[in-house]
Length: 78
Image 1: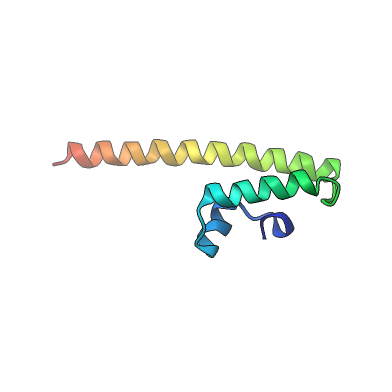
Image 2 (image 1 turned 180 degrees about the horizontal axis):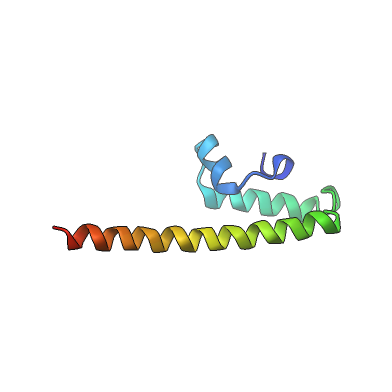
């Protein structure tokens, strides 16, 4: 599922009720043994993937900041 659908390991691990580390090791082993089997991403898709990863990092930082701000203001009003 991880290799064929490009779903995150964490998501698939939760679906299958398997430890993330275990699934990650399985995927790593599969990719090492079947390196030539996976299609190479075209340049446009690689660029899009980098852009999405950058956007994901930014959104995670914003969520973390907003969570801390919400906790701060909630504690201040008590």
